[in-house]
Image 1 (spheres, rainbow, N blue to C red):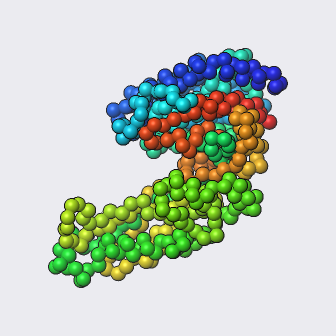
Image 2: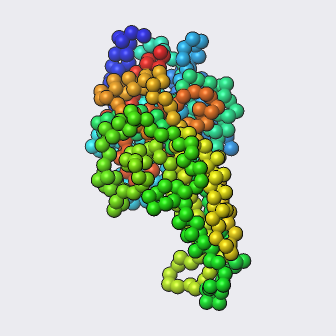
Image 3: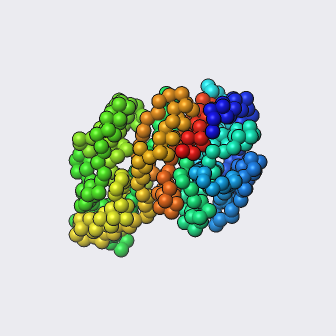
Length: 458
Ligand SMILES: [Zn+2]
């Protein structure tokens, strides 16, 4: 494709920007909160909105009923010999409470300081819409698409639904592609775009400690039976050493170490302890010796207690020995750790350190695979070129400490690499009051998506 047509695409995007913003705001007005059943009809309306839009661009669209919220599948004409991109996104949003902290109502989009304020503006309606509008520019300008496109858009991302996982596992032919593109992450910062090439995985555990058959009088039986809360504390104290290294045997066996180029690249991003303190409000940083903050955040595994429940927590005193104690524990994992193997090692370890006088068990609640996409792959290089031209700034490679479980499912089922092309910002308040999407990033995202359609053609 010639450069001339890309200019026509950019001209279209510039000329129709006001309308594109207004249409995005129409979508944002639909309160598609997937976890709240009172919004079920809104969730369906949000699915319909994006389905109609893709239909209007000449794609074959299907709104698929599931046991949860509907999936939207769409595909353009599939021409043999062209590469195929599958775009994934979600039309559902997080709940909005605490409502009183919103400066303007979450479902009445408002533009202030060159940002759209609304729930879902960034996560994920605004980011997904960049791909749709890039596609629109090609279609309306009569420019042949350089690649085949497919979309799979779900409505349960924020509520942990399984529909898209089941569908992907059962419809690998329909979703077959050369690459999956996901825009549901962030640029590195306001000046620097980034491509995320690695995500941490997860093994989520629950430790349960059982003691007496019922809560006991701590005067009557204190000192003669083991206390499950004390026993749980003893177990937790043995999960990590004083430097934050996890003590589960074999935990680090399969960890892929960072290479020298990655360490240098992370160091050049200059993330300091001061920034960490400002972002978190923690009095000081903490973590494994021998690694910088970004290395620990993005490329080292961890083990953290997420919650502890036992005994009495109400007002004043209640003198008991609790019958049970429970802790939730998340282990963030990195390439090439296997969540199942780590979960099994954790269970064996907890059983082995169970104090006498109580019964202990650990169970694996859910897992996510860690992800690593080779930085030198043609797809990531195409993404890099698209970002550089789309945002007019040199992008960097970044990792993310969190997990996006669907990425592992796409990789396993479709055998295709995943490009994480984030257009949001870490400061966009996703999941918090006053969520934003910068108009500059909407513009940059649409341009990047348009360039990607060309660059990914190879
Ligand atoms: Zn999201």
